[in-house]
Length: 464
Ligand code: BG6
Image (tube, protein in one colour):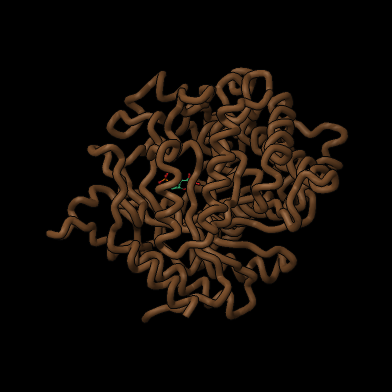
């Protein structure tokens, strides 16, 4: 079945500063946590490719923005790297600021709306050494960084986001120990999650102040982007499975949704955390800060659902209550390269949840994409990668988005993740997401894959 996008539904590209820019020591950029990890243990990265290169967006941003335009895209999102914009004293780094000004000017010149995110897992190392997200001093430093960014770029950027996926660092760095500094401590993880929430709220407060004081352009909006993986459990769940589902949804999704829609954290989740010794470090005055976190809209990154069941063990290795274990659905279709389930209907379920529970908030699909290993296998004689699997992936998700919109979900647009192949954290360039490939052997040259022409046609048909 062919699909047709609704009129006015925007289409664009999602990316991030640390995964694309490269130039990690150019233009006064400070070291960030990925550079530090790469320096300390390069073997942790696929093919020993560390954070240094990105996909060379720093040099190629003009070409890349032209490529987005060539596909008919109307918008793209990237992030400012905190470690590029400010120096260690929190002052503007003029060369860093100049780079982002040039990106803004180029996007404007191409008639492409730039969505700017302030943080994509890329803590500056000097702040990580002061405690990172475990420290309130760093939360304050983030608010000052946000203030500086709003004031510097407020007349050039209309759509702002405080964080991309604030659930990921608490999980990957502090709870599961998968990312540097490899901590496995549920209590510290919860504190980090809480501090990120406060940081979000302080940045929103700075945004509203900047708005009142005339630093922003008319109609400027602030949002939060998260991977609100829709949670599911077994078909015939026990009460314990349902309890696991409540906490999975509570910590990963409702935590952020309540924060940005209601200005507070979900009471039932806090009650459970309190009861099992996992309550974060809440201080007097925090409630007032949390009440300032309401946003204008949301970004929803969707790759896979989250399936959980009651945990086998009640306590983890540190004696903290476990809330759930993963549940492997026997009927799951997997992306074997990434190990993620492909479940397009999840995107619809989220849309319906938003409609019912947070009807005042509009949203867009801020990331969705398919990473595949060794795409050379799919190269035709003419040299083009025939990524029909990717076309199928995007199409099946768009079908469910369109259905959700028809049934009342306020979904405004779609950004494909990694329109141009980029560096994927410790997977480096293992899985390629792009509609456009990057030739690592040849000066990071860009080349369309089959899906690029498909995307272009899809967007043209929307407008015809
Ligand atoms: C999202 C992140 O979670 O998933 C991106 O916002 C990331 O930064 C993307 O690259 C795909 O995941 P991965 O780990 O395959 O790069």
